[in-house]
Amino acid sequence: MGKDGLQSGFSAGGPGPGFQQGMSEEQAQKIFGSLFGGGQGGRPSSGATRIVFGSPGGFGGSGMAGMGGHPIDLESMFQAMGMDMSGLAGDRQSKRHRSQPSSPCALVQGTTVVLHGLSKATEHNGKSGDVLGYDEAKGRYEVAVQDGPVIWVKPTNLTQRCSVEIDGLQSKPELNRKRAEILGFDANTGRYVALTQGASPSMVSLQPGNCILDHGTAVRLHGLSSDTFNGAMARVIEVDRSAGRYRVSCKDGKQIKVKYEHVFC
Image 1: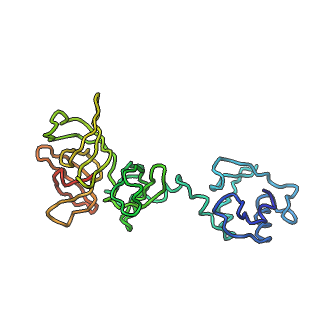
Image 2: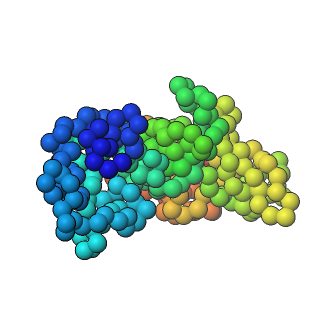
Image 3: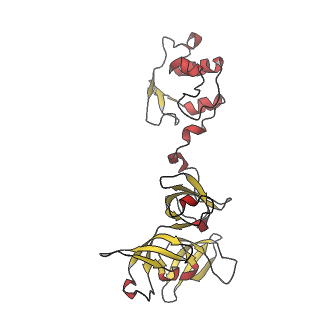
């Protein structure tokens, strides 16, 4: 847009939501001069550096550079002029790096989960999403809902999509020792909705006690006789098949043994 665009302050028709403030003539001249060599009146001097795009990163730092190879950090420059640049980094890709798991027992970034039991954003119940991070202070996960917004979710309102081994199933013993993928959770019955793997996949309803989770799976404890650990997040570090128990490590490093049915993935 050239000099006129800078002087207009990037108002309603500007390049992005980050530009929320007007710009004075003096500010425009300073920016114009820093970009094009600072000739009289903000016009390019005879020895002005020509600006070229160095990468598709746009305003993300070194997205533009002079012919001499020196990057021009537009974001820092506009911030120095008192302008809000937060809107330029507001897409989902930037949000994927905004919060990271701060607990050793939290689901890692990128884990696919299924939402359930939401009392406010009920339209997202049953939908899948990706974990962007975990905020220890809030006690909530940041989740990017598939084809939807980014929301904050309690651990009790999500189930991770993961692979399990079916064990101890009496109604369909032929499925024991087979693998299945957890697709969701029915809070009313306390059962997983899963799809068996193999030549003839089928949908099954499984109790947590009939699922053996893999080593390293992040879990949430429930139904224990001691309320100390109920609701706590932990991670599976050992599977004792003979006893039907996991040995899990809690976020404080303490290790306890719990039955299969006292763990949610």
